[in-house]
Image (tube, rainbow, N blue to C red):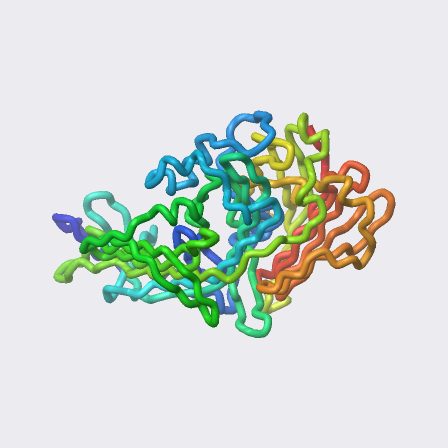
Length: 466
């Protein structure tokens, strides 16, 4: 039929389009900036293999950092990336001159619990769909009309400090989505990334106590700063809290005055209203999204080499290449399975004595489908991922327990050791893996990653280096 004049979607003809759409996880959790997007289909019994492949390879070597050209430095520097990852500098330029709080050191792990949910504010949504029954006359794009539904999820995020410089820190993070509640809950691990940030407060993870102590209480109708006690369970913290109230939005952040660590954050916002609407109907408002983060703990993660130095050969290493395969087995129907080749190419960027940025490109290909490519970026150091300080491997013994995380219940231990190589394994509820290192030079040789909730097992071998 002819296009409708104006800017509303016009019904053409009905095309029945049956698509098996399923999802495991779709999103990232930053407790600091309070962004957690969990798909409500987490508990369904259908999984999208393409998404699972992405998760499996992303979990092998995690990171989200824009890496510049290779450079050498002894410690993390306040470069353009550190400034971009530190909104604190916009409010307090003097933060660039402050060191990290004294409790921040290589191996420090900060754990948060987070949850998020979306609440429909309208009755339906118009979603882009090449076979949709509605057409935008101004663009020709088609949309399908779907019932507006809410979604939600929860999990843990853990932030590990890789290196600490005079004015900057290097860190990395992982999210553990709770797939099935229990004691302990079943988890799905997703990397959040690694980057550098200002030592006084990267992202919103912490704010240097000196800055908090100088802050004065302030109050307007939309923004105010308060001091008071904040309770989480049976623990009470003396906090500085900022609150910002806008039209259709709300945010609050509470920081411990003694340590500076983020204790709690809440962010509520409304999605932008789309100008599209159906004939004889009103414009539908967007969903309301609420994200909450609560501090759980700070501790020292016990991994060999984490307080050591990168091996000497890291100074000249340009790239590492891994090849292998992914095996997908539907967690709820073992008859649905497939194997496909996988490749990872890692290019190293800026680095120092105990930190190194890298970019990771992964390629997977299912038979009969074009190759799928994705790029991840990250941060590693002498305590694992791409290498371990060889001096830290000398005295390790088989079955030696290295670390047990009290929140995720993930246990790290030595699975095997001989004069030539050493295998370090991780086991947790729904998660297991193994990394094999050359015992003489500390270089990563093999990776095995398995997540029961996604049904993906990934095995990769070192092909070569540059």
